[in-house]
Structures are given as C-alpha cells and as structure tokens.
Image (tube, rainbow, N blue to C red):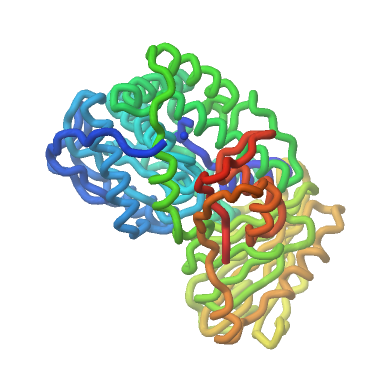
Length: 505
C-alpha cells in the first residue's frame, strides 16, 4: 500500500507532466496568418502533424481535466502567445490549444498535435514569458516529431488503461479491484508524457527556448518557470509530510528531474546569446484577477481537512493526518502508514444498499479473483442517510489488507466510500469514523461555500511576504503558498508597486 500511496500522490497531486518547466508591454504582434484554433479542429496542420483529432481521446482528456475553461480573455491571451511563437517555430498554422479547467499544473501534447494547457499552469506562471515557455516546449515536441516517435511506441488512447495497470501493479491488485483509484488520478497527460524519452524532454526544452528568444521573449523564462514548479513540488511534499529532492525524477521513470532541467534550461538560455528581455508580468497577472484557483464548483472543494461539494450538497471529513486530493471523478486521501480513503459516485441503483454492496460492488471485485469473502455486511444510518457497510479482505504485494466498503444514498444518488488498511495497522476504525462523517448540506449551507479565486493586489510600501500572506484565505502554509504563487524564491521580497496574486474565497 505504500507504493500505491506514493503513486497516487504523484499522479493525483504532482502531475507536472510536460511543463518545461519579469516589464510592461508585449512584443510587437506578428502578422496574422490562418487562425489559431482554441479547442477545435485546425484548418491546416504544422509540418509533419497528423491533421485528424482523436475525438475519443480528446473527450477522455476533457473528462479527466474538468472540461474546457471558458474564459474569453485567457483564450485570446493564449492565442496571441501562439501567434507570436509560430514564426520562430518555422511558420505553419493550426496549433490546436485547449485550456483545461483544472488546478493541476500541466501541459502536454498528444499524437494528433493538440496541445493542452491547464488553468493551474496559467495561474502559476508569474509572467507571459513563463507561460510562453511552456507552450514553446509543447510546440517543440511537435516540430521535432517527438509525438510521432512516441506514437510508434504506444498509442495514446491506451493512456487510461496504462494508469489503471500502474495502480494495480503498485498495489498488487488486479486493476479492476482499484477502478476507483485509477479514476482518481489525473489520467490524461501523465501516462502520455511519461512516454517521452529524457532526451526528447531536454531537446524540447532547448528548442522551445530558441523559439522563445526568436519571438522576443526572455529565454530565461523557461528556467524560472521550472524553478516555480520546483517550489510547488517542495511545498506539496512538505504538506504531505514527504522529503523533496530536486535532483530526483519528479514522476514515473523517464521524466527528467526538475533540478537537472533547470540547469540545462539555464545553459540553453545562455546559448541564445540574448540577455534578459521583457516579460510582461503586469499584463499577465492582471488577466488572472477573478480566475478560479483550485477546483471548480462542479467538482467540489478540499477544505479544512475534508471535502465539500456545494452543487451535489454533501460533505465529509478525511481521516486525521491523511493528505486529500480531488479530481474530476473521485476524491482520494492517503497517509504515511499505507492507508487510503476514496469517495466516488456509483452507478444508479434503486435496491437496498446491502444488495448493492454484495451483488454489484463486491461481485465486480470478486471476478478479479484476488479478494476474500465479505464480512460484517449490514445496513446502517449515516447522519440520517441510508447506508450499508462491509469489510473485504484483499491481498497486496506488501501483504494482506482490509478494504472498507461503505455505500450511502443521498438525494437519489449512491456514493461509494472505500478505505484500504494494511492488516494490523489499526487504520480500519479510523476509516470507519471518516465514512461516518458523510453528511448532506442544506441549501443555505451549500450557498455559503464559494470557490477560491485569484485576487490581484498591488504591493504597498510596508508590505512583506508575511503581511500579504495574512490576506490569503487558505488552509495553512499561507506564506509558502504566497511565495509559490508569485514565484518568490527563499529570501526574495515583493517590490512596492508590484502586482501580486493572493487567494480569496
């Protein structure tokens, strides 16, 4: 279960995937060619690019990453960046960029040539140059034919299945027995990008930096954004109670370590022969005012050590000491003792919940053959809601474990709460208590829950990191989160008059 917990943390919380990772006005606009299409098929493909979008894969990516982020200002902004990068990348048209509505910091390309950039990445970038460095990196994967060579190794449409296999292998269970955990990962992107070789990643960094410099952007922006990614990874590791080593591979086996990539990006920037150029931080940050930070309302929010979903009108508390992560399809929480807790929606079911556990849920797991017999199956009430529970012995590579199975019906829908406790860990009662916190919300309670948003403020003469962090409405680590959000390295201070991002609710 330790392996399962580590992989879940990486895939669900630290998916930086292919991300390569400060002045006043933007570069002169380049001549307008054929339109750059945001999220729709392009009229013409770049050199060597497959013109046909894989609609099935595109749909899976949108489903896993919360759909398209519909903000005309940001869409136009990214479109302008692509226009400016295109001449330096050799011209061509039809770079298909989709903005994804997820806080996951990620960018990746798929074999059709579509490039995906997340809302989380846009909000983490401190200026236009940093965001352009990510897009330039992805364009480089296309122009250097990395996508085609990757497609020869494995079809991208197998990415979802690949993650399921990874999760199942890590836990020693058949992937079907961990279907919910597989769904909990931010599937699209992580597995695909991991298929790039280390050499291709470094090449895309170097080529993308040349595109940056040729487009009038500061070539140092790529290394700076990678440094911001490193700060974020360090903070996430600290929150999860882990040690972070920037010289280790960040996730899976083929992705270069962040520290190594920063050093290589700095060398590539020097090789362009250009000094620092304008980065347009004020324009970039001003566009982020009011943008949702973290999960969108339709996915619910991780708040105060628990989870609340105002649209579906329910909440629950994660087990004490567990690190909780939300995705578009499930909520997971893991701890340092090998425990895991998962909530997900279940297929529609009108019968009794004991029958649901025995005839639907358990039957599906039992078909995989590596589970024991149900015990303790009975109907219960959880905060006035119909529910049922049972315990299922399972066998993992690390030894026997118990799976808590709780089904609860709320406003006509059935939710599954799964807990995994290594045998002898004493975690099963902890997981039981967490399941008992599932509760419905009144309309008034749901209306009081609002999404977190970026608020842009100007640094005053007496402001410090500490004073600005006091204005952050977050669950702990306010100063650290402020530094990560604004790309401030240890010891750096905000400058009076500078625009900075804070988080409010």
